[in-house]
Length: 121
Image (cartoon, rainbow, N blue to C red; front, side, top):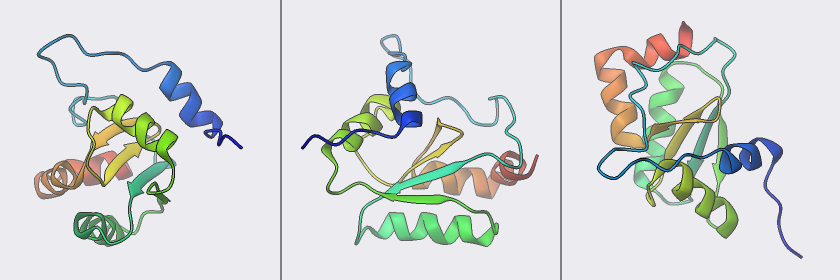
C-alpha cells in the first residue's frame, strides 16, 4: 500500500521551484516575509541524530510549539525534503511550509537574534 503525503506537503511539493544554476534553493529567512505568531513549525528529524536533538533543544529554549516529524521510514517524505530544501541531511526546519534550513542555520539565526524575530513577530 502506497503512503500518501499530507495535503500541505503535496501542495508544497507540487509548487516547488527549481533554483537557477548557481543559486541556493533556501531563502534568507531574515529577508523573507515575516511570519505570524501562529506560524506552523515543522522539524524533520531521525532517531539518534545528534544535530536533531540540538535543534529540538534550541527551539525548546524559545518555548514554541513545533511538529517533530520522523522521516526514517518514509522514502516519499525524504524525497520531498530533498526536493524542497536541496539537502539530504537532517534536521530540516520549515515554517509555514517554507524551508529555513538545518541545525547550523537555526543556530546562526538564534545567535543573530533573527530566529526570535521570526518566531514572535
